[in-house]
Length: 226
Image (cartoon, rainbow, N blue to C red; front, side, top):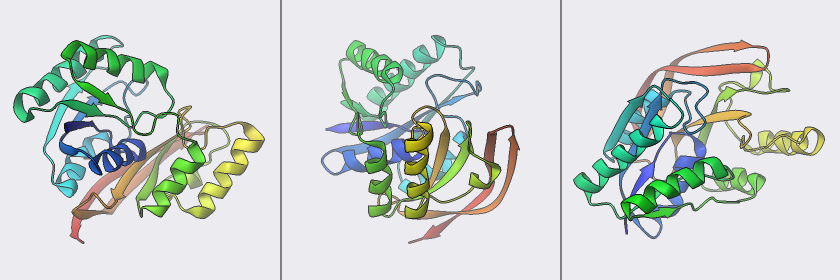
């Protein structure tokens, strides 16, 4: 089937796209850039760089900027999906939704209204298994934001590796955090994976952090041949 990827640039949306690409034809990306950092629906750190990721993936990008008003942003998402239907004849959407019933139910409702398929290849996946999947498939994933105790500033800009997964698993056992960030504890940014035709190199960045909340701001990048 021809699918569009609901794309944030974080690990879950890229892994969902990668898994869907094994059996389906992902023909475009859809990004909703929310100006509301507290959006219930959409990832926000470094969201403007989905344009760079679309170039790395060699896929066209439909991007809509929204104020992030709770129900209005859903209408804007529906318009973006309709645009993908009109321009690329998509038959479905692939998402990176893992555990959020709020997100999954709202995207499913839109797909039902537009009579297209909603594919959630990561749905209810074990979060440690998901993180290990990234390593096994050679994803390069940066921690782009932290938003909960006990994440300190030192986490920002770190690449997810086996050592980090071990720490996250320990934090899950001791503090009941969601190790893949499903409770909003962390956000991520993908610079490389098997689906990328080019690798993203971060050449300039800054961080901001206060009271267990911080963001790794990617300011400049370049694309490198693989």
